[in-house]
Amino acid sequence: MSTNPPFVKICCIASREEARLAVDWGADALGLVSHMPSGPGVIADETIAGIAAYVARHLPQHIRTYLLTARQTAAGIAAQHAVCATTTLQLVDEVAPEELVALRSLLPGVQLVQVIHVLDDASVRAALAVAPLVDQLLLDSGNPNLPVKALGGTGRTHDWALSARIVAQAGIPVLLAGGLNAANARAALGAVQPHGLDICTGVRSAAVSGSALDAQKLAAFMQVVKG
Image (cartoon, rainbow, N blue to C red; front, side, top):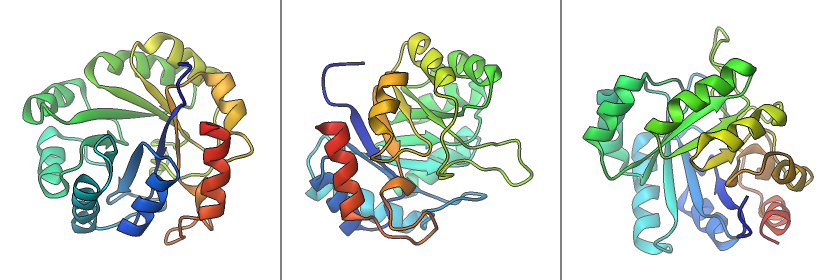
């Protein structure tokens, strides 16, 4: 892990006001959740586009906007990006290698982040296999094998020892997500040594869809992470 303050992505941003609040407290990136089979924070693609445009025009230039998409084809993801126009695509479900190559060709200026839902040793192998095809990995606590896929926003931690193995071997920046909050962020950084942290429910008023970004929880989390 770098001696620089960890990169922080605040996810489930639902409005321009939440975007500014997160950035005012030191967020480096904002997660904007499109249609998902389950989980909190879903907003319309048109709302995502409006927030992304606001960030690009009115907030510091280094702030990145992540479109969380459950689509799995290059054509489908590119079509969604054409509407949302974020700086980064966070692929929350598995995307085949050939689709990642095609997506890179379609959107060469857009960063690609593959989410790995850390369940077991197979998750480690999957992360290391896909790492050469993307710009970042994001390690989360969902489960795409459930009858209704859980692709994020679970509020649960996972086995950080598995994540630490991925970080040590991936060769690209890795973000850690899943059940993070002010109370466990320092332990997570120490155990996993990620490039940064990603948080949704841990800085919201309740771990449910429609909950508000909580300034007090956000401040406490950022004080721990950014110091």
